[in-house]
Amino acid sequence: MTLLETAGMTERLRACLPHDVDYASLRFVDERSEYLRVRRDTVDPIFNDHDTGVMMSIWHGGGLGYAATTDLSPLGLDRAVETARHWARITAGTMVAAVAPPDPSVGDYRSAVEIGWETLPLEDRLELLAQQSRLLGRDPRIVDWEAGLTRRDVDTLLLTAGRNGEEGRVEQRFQFVYPRMRATANEGTVTQTRTFGGNSFCGQGGVEVLARFGFGDAAERIAEQAVELLTAPNCPDGVMDVILAPDQMILQIHESIGHPLELDRILGDERNYAGTSFVTPEMFGTFAYGSELLNVTFDPTVAGQLASYGYDDDGSPAAREYLIKDGILVRGLGGVMSQRRSGVDGVSNARASSWNRPPIDRMANLNVEPGTSTVAELIGSIERGVYLHTNNSWSIDDSRNKFQFGCEYGQRIENGAIVGAVRNPGYRGVSSNFWRNLTGVADADSFIVMGTPNCGKGELNQMIGTGHASPACRFSNIQVFGGEA
Image (cartoon, rainbow, N blue to C red; front, side, top):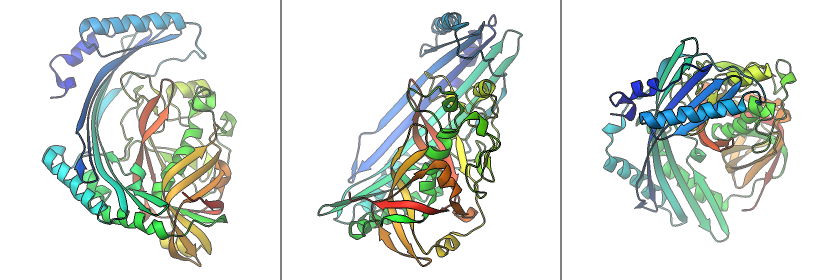
């Protein structure tokens, strides 16, 4: 039985909501996590975490107040209400923008689970990781290696009440799985690391998430590629074509599309901490963000993707929307309050990392839609270039415009064929120019649904998961470089 299923819990939470204010919401979060790791064939201490609390929000008289608490007793909840009332009174008339609260919603969401974790006992989970560890460390040149698995179950309940008697209730239950592997090889002065997709192979579901990403078949390949990179030549320098594999595309999407389109950045809310954006409100509807091949959707309805949900944390129903259509910027990444402030169309993406943080504009599932080319056709079209896999470093300016990214593994392309691996590959560019150089998008056969589990933003900081999916993509006239490491 989860805490939300405890007798009388929902009624207790509902009873504390005030009805003499313009609008009130209570967001309950109950999170249970398990962290397993086998490093160098040794089981690390098992770590389990249970975190529960509520966030009370009150809109009244043009002010907005928050109060978070772990005290779920009637007295503790009443104190949170009074604290939120206090801050709503103080902020009345002083807000940067007077914004009405979201409309109440009623609904629910459940992560789709095919195989429950109760079918894989703890000893079996540890043996699975031990098997992968043994495969990762078989070559004596592998000097450090690990296999890990994190599970998170998160129950949320959003209750809302307005002065006119309207009430909302949104209950959501999420189950997340984060498998990971790493192998580090060394020979002389050269050290190289390969990972399981840079920790991007994660999603919602049960045991089936491991098979979805081929977790049980990846260890030998990861170790072999780490060793291969020890003797591979350094990545060549110069302007050339590149193909970005899906596990590198997710970083490109995240940093140079996702963050620049967040409306709170565009409005200046994040300026002092996470930066602003090169995008301005006037660009929506006309700006050529990329070539005509670029189609980007916000889609929290994809089954199994890391940031799928039915409603955002303000209670707005989730729906699939195009952000960029045929290269043209059409919609921003902002929840209902940012939309009302900016006058720009947005999406349902007001999200909070936990019970003790208010919702802010966050990416959820942000996907580049498949094209019509095969990966073989993309490779065959390149006279000189590189095929880049798995991000391992990133740098981008405060306006999310100029960037420089490094990858774990590269493959040199000559005359339409892959001719060998290169190490320490990197590339740089300017966001809009880069996407306008998109000259090939692979079809659905290379489309992979992945995620980024650790996106940070906000003051106080909020670490949250975002979903990204993409096929392999070709870009022309890109500045590529190698760096000895």
